[in-house]
Amino acid sequence: MRFPAEPFRIKVVEPLRRVTREERERRIREAGLNIFAVSADSIYVDLLTDSGTAAMSDNQWAGMMLGDESYAGSRNYFAFEEAVHSIFGYRHVIPTHQGRVAENLLFSTVLKRGDIVPNNIHFDTTRANVEHQGAEAVDLVIDEGLDPVADHPFKGNLDPAKLERLLAEKRDRVPLVMLTITNNSGGGQPVSMANVRATHEVCRRHGVPLIFDACRFAENCWFIQQREPGYANRAVAEIARELFALGDGCTMSAKKDGLVNIGGFLALENAAWAEKVTNLLILIEGFSTYGGLAGRDLEAMARGLREVLNEDYLAFRIGQVAELGRLLDAAGVPIVKPVGGHAVYIDAKRMLPHIPQAEFPGQALVVALYREFGIRAVEVGSLMFGHRDPATDEMVFPRLELVRLAVPRRVYTTEHMRYVAESVIELFRRREQLEGLRITYEAPVLRHFTARLEEVGRGATPAPAKPGRKVASGAAP
Ligand SMILES: Cc1ncc(COP(=O)(O)O)c(C=O)c1O
Image (spheres, rainbow, N blue to C red):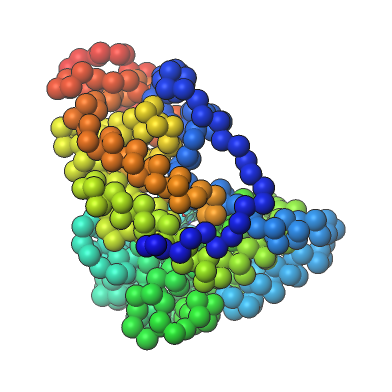
């Protein structure tokens, strides 16, 4: 046994429908080769995201039946507030219906046009919410964090020297520093306690608050326990308290390490910020003791936040993701290493070198995984991030061309993961048969959600697609 077996037994089951290859072929074609447009009931193993997809425990469901749906002062809010106080320690606890609202409330309150927000790597919604205020989102991850094969135990670390330089020059424009644990956009890589401390020191010297993006805090603290000298005998809950004591607040999407399907919060030490945020919350989300959620959701979140710190659960959770990575790596499938907390990332550029980035190798792999095996993954590469340089009109491609297999929490068994590994390995063996794609329609922003594509003959040059337009099939060159 390479990792602990499931530390739970299954009390409720949700049947999975297996559709035929012909039906999958029809559905993916109707979807314009875009996996976001395929209905979930035709998917066998859905690894699109680990966000909001967790299975809740019997304890959480029991809590839902104790929902107090009072408009103000619901008892579930107080249970939730107590859970947040005991784990995160911050004084002011503001519930929201998901993480990006916590980001929006915080940045609307503290940022102004021209400000700068440093982070290890901003998650998409964090970056978008910073930029929405006319501010600049700056990524300061260590260099190893951008190298898919660098073997470093804490590739999510922020580079304190880069932060020091930025603050020395532009302190006046930096109202806060963010630190994302684990670093989702860098492959779910953890941040070490030593790095949190170093970041805290730089922030303190310059008098700048440090705010965590805490979506996967328990997974991050598990990695600290497992990998960082001096923490092997410390409980994950204790490690979390030590870590959060080095900051001034956090944003949280509880759809990850809150083990719920909806929920989030903002927790702050600064009373003046909390007051402004609360007033805005009441304007756009709801009263301060429910923040866009039902009482029962708050109860499920309160219980989930405590459950996620269970170390049998974390050993299984991180072990299950690592095992999927190990199986792929052992068969020679190129993946980002070391494997992060919530997902395995396949390096599509290395797996499919015959498909140029202009022909979306990552998306070609995503399509093949669904068509052949009913598995849904997501492309994190040139379809998601490729864009035209406004100055030169040339296409700019991202450095990495990845396919993410994100594992929902407590949902799939070890056998499901083996099925996924065998499927990917089978495609790896026949990788030369996979063809590149070209876009036939794309929206001006966030095109990956709604783009439509078709296969190109191998060797053909794809039509250069301009944003927001239909692209004629087979258009020159
Ligand atoms: C690191 C990180 N921050 C913020 C968010 C946004 O959370 P939500 O989807 O709940 O708005 C996510 C969601 O995936 C995330 O991974």
